[in-house]
Structures are given as structure tokens and as C-alpha cells.
Amino acid sequence: MKRWLSSLFLIIFISTFALGGCSNIEASDSQTSSRDNLISENREITPAQSLPTLDGKATVKLKVNGEDILVEVDGENAPFTAGNFVDLVDRGFYNGLTFHRVVKQPEPFVVQGGDPQGNGRGGFIDPETKQRRFIPLEIKPEGEEEPVYSKTLQQAGITQDPVLKHTKGAIAMARSTVPDSASSQFYFALDDLGFLDGNYAVFGYVTEGIDVIDEINQGDTIESAEVISGLENLLKN
Image (cartoon, rainbow, N blue to C red; front, side, top):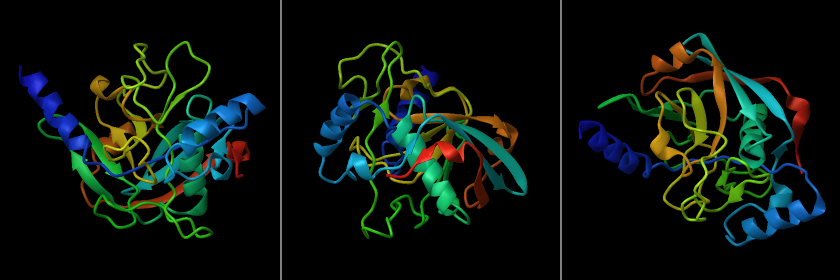
């Protein structure tokens, strides 16, 4: 009962997030058209042809409290989400931003950052369009070739687990209750959080420095973020 109540509390807590991240990968004409149609249903979302995409994988190094965190970003299974994150890292967007929300009680949950406002309400403003970049919710079910867009797996009537799960060290995009509201804010899972699977877009995993993440406190700064491999896989449309 205690575990169930804690999980319920955390679900309610994460539903207040206002973050985001996605990317689109170059695919066949039919696949690209399908994605464009899904994304264009919400006029607030940046058109698919304008979104950065990650065609493969990349490694990002974050420095927090003088220590390194290495993240493998998975554009094979979350091309929009991964592309958005790698693009923002490459722009230097995350340098100097803080982790504005850290939840470790009643049990380890998440550390969340990537908000330029520092209050959980900010996102990335594209300098070219002067508009906030919103990206679609993107979750790939096991056994499927393409991700589901703009819906949770439950909303899409899909019972398979996602390929990318909320295991400890997962990095995912935070969002509000609107599926396609992700922009720049992300979170690290401090524990296995299976109850979030199919609802939020995981796009990679920590490969080194999980102990550094465990020690992050609210207000700690992302001293630097850089793409150390795989930048050639980033496609800027």
C-alpha cells in the first residue's frame, strides 16, 4: 500500500512538469509524410520538416558539481526527441542552467533541469522563428518499426511496453498534461519508474556518472554540456 501511494503521488507530481524533447529522423517519403501529418494535428508543434533529427546515436557529456555524466542518446528509437536534445546541447543552451526540481522523497524519483526560467515553465525559444519549439510526444512500442506520436501508448490503445523504459539512469523529456508540450526540460530517473512507461518520452540512458546524478540537489548547475560523439548524426532541417 505504501509503495502504491508513493507511486500515485509521483504520478501527480510529474504531471505538473513543463518540459520537452523530440526529434525527427530522415526516413522514407511515406514515413516522413506520416510523421508530418501526425505532428501537424497540433498547430503549436514545430513542423516536422523544421525539427532537428538524430539519425543514430550520440554521446553527451554533462558536467555537474565538477563531475562528468555521460549519456548515450538514442536517435534510433526516439529520433525527434533525441535530435532536439542533441541540437540544444550543441547550441550551448543547457550551459549554466540549473536543476530546478529534485524529488528524492518519499522515495527516489527524478532530477529535472533544462528550464531557462528556472521555475519549471520555460522552454527553448528558436532564435529564427522567435517562437518556443514544441515537439511531439514520441514513444516506440516493442516490436514496432515506428514510434507513436502525440499520444501515450494507453491513448493509442497499445499494450506493448515501450522500447525505451524508465529504468534508473533513463533520461526523458518532461511535459505538461498536453502530450505535445515538451520543449527543452528533461529529467533523469533516480530509480526504476515503470509506472511512467508509455506516458513520457525516454530518449537515452546514463552510461557513466549515475552516482553524480544521485547527489544532485535542487539549484545545482549544469556547468557544461557537450556532444562528444555522434554529432555527425544530427540532421538540422
